[in-house]
Amino acid sequence: MASDTVKLGNWTDEPCYYVDCIDGKRVAYLVGPFKVHKDALNMVDGARNYTVSQFPMAQFYSFGTCKRENGHLDGKFNSHFMANGTWDGTCDCLSEC
Image (cartoon, rainbow, N blue to C red; front, side):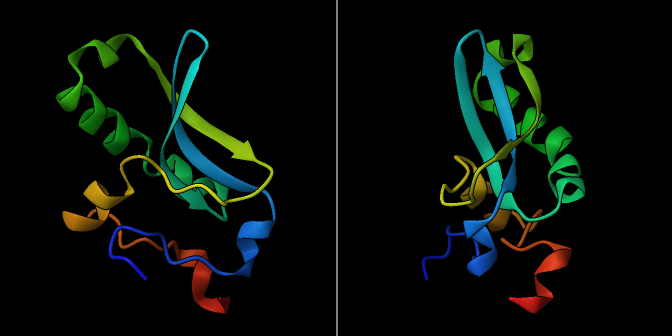
């Protein structure tokens, strides 16, 4: 598995959560997937801060979480949060995977 890929289990076939960013009709999935909504919520501030540091206009965007029908997408900034040790590509809920 590549180092910038989330450690996925079969739970990703079920609904999953992401930290997202919205600018008008544009939506970006920044970090995720997460099995539990709380884990996505815990990453919102870090994802917002990093996004604004890379794209200053993002300070005007909306940040939050969303639920998707599955977790088959990797978040755009997963590799950043895994490289700097903020997130290891898992969440507390993955012990069963």
